[in-house]
Image 1 (cartoon, rainbow, N blue to C red):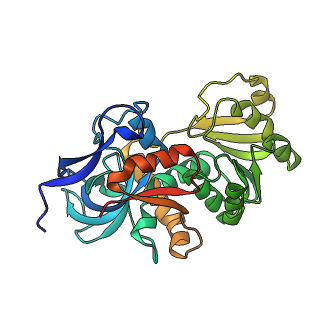
Image 2 (cartoon, helix red, strand yellow):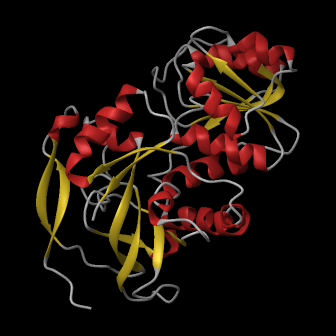
Image 3 (spheres, rainbow, N blue to C red):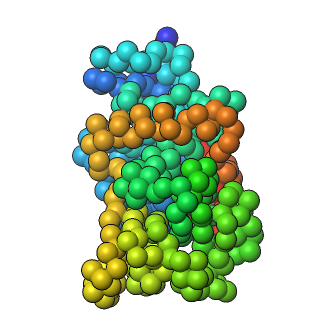
Length: 329
């Protein structure tokens, strides 16, 4: 296959707001050992992209400086020691960076097949979100059928995924969101109760149900002590982001007396092997649900690659419900 020497891309010209995202021409990346080269068709937009753009989230030294942590498209070349993919295969992949471009490299073990009946647009929304939810809710958080699960930011890309997966695996799902429209979306996706945090306090609602066995928190700050009040004895809380900041004053006696577990993780700094193991678990446990159409990503909006700044502005407005994507072609 004859490949071009250069490609269209969008780079972070300097730390700042959405306007610092600028279209550029870059040299085509080359797949290294264990990597594949993907001609991207769609790219998912995620909060870490905006944090990187603002200068608050450094890319790993070995990663591209271009934003973009998930994409779908066609494999056009493979590096040494790649046997599971070949040129022509359609995939979606978790990326170390570089997704805001016509071509991107990814570890072959971090790519997954396109679910049956799903288009490439929807598939681009799977990797970053599903890797994050599966590893934090089901592996780190150990959510089980019948347990009460509280997810904040229920209408976000992470939230809409967590609601669907938790419900599909038999948990009782409670979600918070900031409008009636967002709450309605949460209940349609499988939440037993969606709580408009502008009008109601989630703490007494969860306490009345017996407390949350697991909380997935991306808010932090003043939510942390409230989450602890809302938790059941022996409950767990997993942090994946801190939109209200990473600091809070806590009564740690409650953690001891009620045997609570607080943990958390970020996906990007984890080893390639750790991410490959998550990919294997997703392929075994979650891809059959996607193949069957039992769950699917919820798309809020799409933008051309060159309008990545508008996509970031949309995400940071917090008006969106579900995922935002960039169309590359």
